[in-house]
Amino acid sequence: MLTIGLAQLHIHAGNPRYNLTIMQQYIQHAKEENCDIIIFPELAIPGYFIGDLWEQTDFINESIACGEEIRKAANGIIIIFGNVAIDKNKKQHDNRLRKYNAMFIAHNQSFIGPSRSPYPFYIKTLLPDYREFSDPRHFTSLIQVAQEENCTIYDLLSPIKLNTSSPHPLRVGPLICEDSWDDAYQVKPMLNLQQEAPIDLFVNISNSPFTIGKTKKRHELFHEKLNMLHAPAVYVNVTGIQNNGKNVYTFDGSSSAYNQDGTPVYTCKTFSDELAILQYDEVNHQFIPPSGYIQKNNTSEITSIYEALHYGIHTFLTTMGIEKVVIGISGGIDSAVNAALYARVLKPENILLVNMPSQYNSDLTKNLSQQLADNLQCPYAIVPIQDSVELTCRQIQDIQNNQPRAAAAKLQLTDAVLENIQARDRSSRVLAGIAAAFGGVFTCNANKAECTVGYATLYGDSAGFLAATADLWKHQVYDLAHYLNDKVYKKEVIPQEIIDLVPSAELSAQQDITKGQGDPLCYPYHDYLFAAFIEKWNRATPETILNHYAKGTLEEYLGCPISIHSIFPNAAAFITDLEYWWKRFSGLGVAKRIQSPPILSVSRRSFGFDLRESQLTPYYSQAYLHLKEKLLTPQK
Image (cartoon, rainbow, N blue to C red; front, side):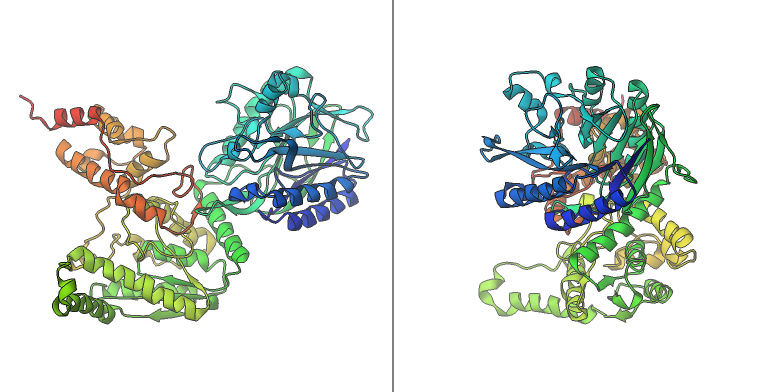
């Protein structure tokens, strides 16, 4: 019987020395528990999302030096961990130092590599280059090494034999993250390793960010592969947050042990650091569940969303050293949900809620803002903006009236300009000033639907230090409001009236919430339409949408629970709406998203570096234009 420790730990990206210290503590703990093997995640020393820090040779050397410290600690225990590796005699394709995303196995203070590898470490075979991942930008794969060695990849994909306390060597199949997600690749590392020699234990070390539904999908993947290969596996992932500048990703851990039929025997608690001590029967190739442990079923989507947001906000604030937050609250659902989220992270006295009414804000929403603040027991301030908005308008008019050289510019205070002046006054002047005086920062309360079409004011409500809910569709924001009341607070902190109100910016007389006059977006239809533009793997265009509309299959394609024909009486109305929002998504919306705050990413595709955008003009294919003409031409 072998004792194996799964080290699920919070990796601090870009801080090798800190990570080394934590790893040494885990190793000492594992030795005290008489572990034969301890397994750490992928790139446990340098971290994963560190941008182009990979181009700094000094940083690489520091990470390697930390890896040497781990090697020295491998006395009386086998240590498996991820780190960057180099070959000083070779170059990357960009002519920089050759780097590998590698798995190191240290035993008796020496590194052990695969039997046929030219290096004393295993090199990641499959390098992802999609979504937020860009491994080939920095690392060389095992596939390329095989080409350079003038051999096949199968010549280098080989198990690693470990001499443990067991009388028989343990044949380990080394894998790094993507190596198990091989469906779309020609090379199949798990299958190839098992064909080489029967594997006693697959070891997958990962640095994999949280995405809604990913844990369930991962369990399904390992169940299918291990059941086919008849071999057990361990999966070791990190916790913490990492970012690429525009996206803040949470890492949920969910490290697991699987028996040879693919059944998960143990899964670490999500978003929690843990050294899981497991017993492995190397004769029968199965894990023994810890006494009293019960494998939990998958959590609901809204539960996982809340857990990711709560953990992400808490960890981001702690990492950045932020202790105080200012939140502008309007009496609407988005700001209410953000306030309730932050109030579970910070002490009430460290959150200042600010309502900034103009002449267009109703007593209803002002009273609801007060009620929300009372329920959360947070400090509350009312800062009317009508006088300052009117001052700005007068100053613009004075430019035209009193400054002849500027008068030729023909400044016009249109309705849209007046609305945007209010939004900018609230954020750029009031919230920014109050946050500085409070010794904190102010939030961006955007949702994903608004971000998609730029339904926000640049330097106004699109501003803030972090957009915690900007990867949630509007219907998910409502679901989260119910969850916060029912499950988190277990009482109505977000007033039901806020949930029931029609969404409205209250920026003009035409957005009178007491008359049911709200935003131009139709929820949840536009949520599902915009999701098709962004989140589907084969992303939709107007051509895709119009084809499904013409066939009568649009609701099914979008997954929309309401009838399209209940919203649009005819094809002309449908096409007008489609083109209106497509222009905003593809046009000015891109410019606004580029200048938006970092997003706390939870979905399968979020704005930021996950969805790389160029500022282009909206485009309609010829097929779309032909179908549009056909649908709009009266039938004879």
